[in-house]
Length: 107
Ligand code: FES
Image (cartoon, rainbow, N blue to C red):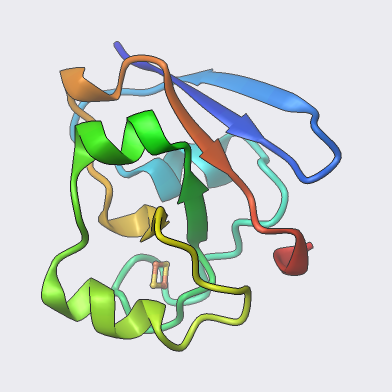
C-alpha cells in the first residue's frame, strides 16, 4: 500500500498508508490532515480539497483532466503549476512516496 506524505504550511509532515482505489482527499480526511475540507465529498464541485504536489510527484501523476482544470481556476488558495484537486487523485502504485503540500489559506 503506497505511503503518502502531507506537508502543512508550518512544515510539519504526516505520513499515511493509503489503500489503492481510495482518493488522496479521503486519506487526508480519514487521517485528520488539517486544511483539506472537501465540502462536496469528492463530487468535484467545491475546490476545498485543493492541494499542491511537489514537482516530481506532479510529473509522475500527470496533468488534471479538463473539468478539474476548470475548477482549479476558482479555488480559494492561489493556483500553482502543480495544483490538483485531491479528490480526483485515485491512489495506485505510482503514489508511493508522493508528496502533497496543503495550501496555507485553507487553514
Ligand atoms: S472534494 Fe470538492 S472538489 Fe474535491
